[in-house]
Length: 190
Image (tube, rainbow, N blue to C red):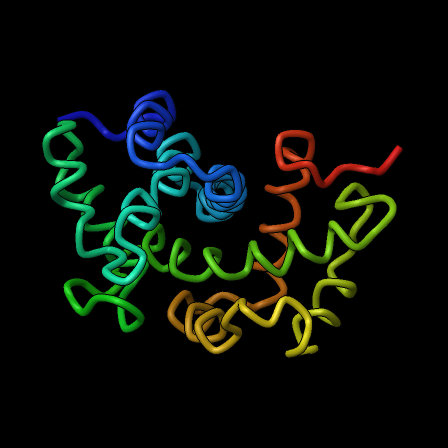
């Protein structure tokens, strides 16, 4: 089987997701994953597709997230390794099936929550993400009341798993999402 492509990821996600905010989150995680792939010298397009499709079962099964990924993706011909990569982002949170093992899986685990803090920070700024600096994100990350639904402990666990400095991962998220700021609606306000 071929690796997942963005075209296929978008086609599949449309079958299982209707909520606009979930498509925006898919785009944000995809953008961050692309930047992480570049950091590791990996296949950017593949990582972006995995990031885009990571919450494929969330809308239909919010209480059983990651437990229905296989049944939705196997019939679509998605590669077993890609299915496992997507399932792994819920490890210790909603599934125990597979711990993140590869840099791609560890990146997905980490940026899933982190993109929420980046998005919220960008939305609060008149210039959006266009000129957002790492120090702004770090300040908001420390404020547990800001974007409170984004689990900082999960993000920190991800940093440790990756063995990459938090600043590097945060900068990757900013850079990746900045490249997609128009699609994400986080560019400069008129």
